[in-house]
Amino acid sequence: MNWRQFLTPVQSIDTNQAKAYLEGKQVNDLTILDVRQPKEYEAGHIPGAVLTPLPEITDHMHRIDRSKPVMVYCASGGRSRMAAQLLSGQGFSNVINVAGGFNAWTNEVAFLGEEKGLALFDGVTSVENALAVAYSLEEGLKEFYDSMASRVDSAPARQLFHQLSQIEVKHQDRILAQYAEITGEPVNRDTFEAQQVPAVLEGGLSTEEYANLLMPAYDTLPDIIELAMSIEAQALDLYLRASQKARNEAGKKALIQIADEEKTHLARLGELMEEVLN
Image (cartoon, rainbow, N blue to C red):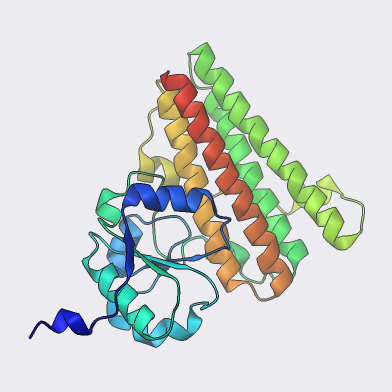
C-alpha cells in the first residue's frame, strides 16, 4: 500500500511562478512560510517569510491566518510539500507549495535571524513611535548612499548613488505625510530627525555590518543597484517582521504600509537594473 494516497493533495508552483504570484500581491495579502531550520533561515530567506520549522509546524498553526493564502517553501520542495499537506489537512483552504524551494530562488533575499533588528522597535507602543523609527532608518540609508557618492570615481556611479539617496528622501516625505494623516498634527521634521537611530540603515544593520555581510562592489552600475536591492530586501523583511510583533493594530498597519513601499522600491530597482543592462 502506498502511504502517499492518504495525504491531502496540494497545489505546487515553481519559483518563477512564485515570483509572478508575489508581484501581484501586497505584503499583507498572504503568509509566506519558511519551514526550514533556523540556521538555514539566517543564511538567507525570502523577505517577510515567517520561520516555522517543519517539526514545529503543528505547534504554530494557531498563529497562521486561515483567511489568507499561505505560500510554503523549504530548501528544495520536499519539506514544504509535507507542510502544505499538513496545513491543507487541518482546514487551510489556500495553500501553495513552492517546488524547487529556496535553492532555486534567484530573486531578492534577506539575511539573519527573526529577531535581528527588532530591538530598534522595542518599546514602540504607538504608530507615531513606529514612524519615527522608520524615518530614522531611511535617514541612515540616505546618509550611506551620500557617503558612497563621495567615494566613487565614476560619474555615472556617483549620479546613481545620489539618485538612490533622493529616493530615500521621498520615502521620508511619505512617512511624514503618513504621520500627519494619522495624528492630524503638523509635521515637524526636526522632531523626527532628533530621534534618529545612529549608524543604522533601513534593514536594521549598521554600515559596517552590511559591508561585512554583503561585501559589495561599487565599480559598476549593476553592482550598485544589486547593493541597493539587497538593502531594500533586508528593509522589507525587517518591516514585515516588526509588523508581526507590533503591539497595536495602528502600528502594525503603518509598518505594513511602509513594507509595501519597500516592495515598490525593489520593483523600481529591478526596472533600473534592466535599463542599465540593456
